[in-house]
Length: 476
Image (cartoon, rainbow, N blue to C red; front, side, top):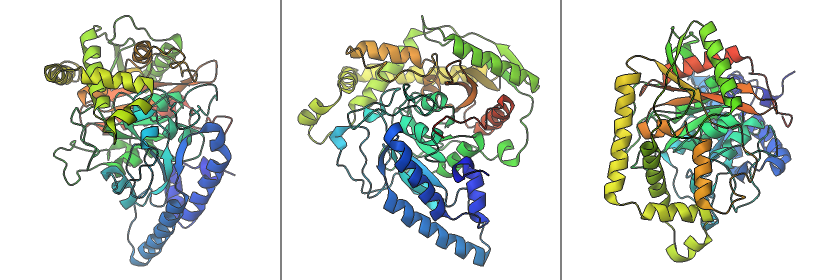
């Protein structure tokens, strides 16, 4: 018989609505697993036990009232969720992975958190992230590094590494993350999960954390495409103060259980970054995916986009400006407490002129226009590896104290993911392959602006065809 954490998030939601499980049972089950497993995995920063039990009790009262009135509750009502430790949750500590914010308590909910609460989700706690969510690994000075549930020697990736590790270890059924250069998709790929980075404007960054560069957006992680899409649906929508929202939505073939139509898919095996090639494991995953898509009746064609260092440089400039804009209470004293790579990025950001920032953002818009006019006029979806390398060992990026070398290594590790932050287009990573070391290797699907419905329908079909839905790490 399946245990509670074997159920998908949507199955848990159905069991709650049917009276087969209570939200309090769910919360206690996951709190017990966190207590047992997290000393090894280090996925959580703050476990919000009192808040979770209070929210579970409130969800049960709402269930009782809904049964009495015939009200239909949402698909994840009463289901637990983990939240990345960059989001504000009223009354909960928010460290952003930094000792500079070790004691900061939020006095407001971010819009994405408010939407999760209003949907009846129950917040288990906040999950680990590198300082200011800057890196593709989850190591900081707050405590031990977050470990990949598939192999404790390996990193879960970053910057939403704590969220990915929590879901992959069965300490949460679904999790929130943020993605400014791949930070949802990188750890999802490394941990054998689905990660969705939605279209720019799909999920609010307000009311405080609006990202004027357009790079960062809230996203969702889950074991199945349906779970991640359901969470993203509940997080999405225009909120007070927002001035833009993505068109359409996720309610489409996936929600109706309909297979996607025959699609034309462009395969890009190599990244647009000069002198970077993908590891053989990533090519194996891509080859396997092409075979699955062709067998499903889709038209798959390989194409190449010329490497462009200018685009990579533009991304680096904007990324560093974002790092430099994190406000510290005591700029001089707190700056010295920051990690070397963070200080390096902030110094780089301060050196970027207004004209350089404008030129970089203009380059971003040009890339988005080019993809729309040239690629998505012909193709429905772009398929690439998610990462250029298998999951990295813990400490692999930090053994060298040269921050510039660290930056270059990260760029070579994650050359595919920033394209969708640059352009604001949606992308989904899907677990399809495990290498000879038993480490997950994901592939990424990218699509037209606002067309998450096509991406998630195709991703669900692909995940099912890959036959890995029941695969679990030993720690499970």
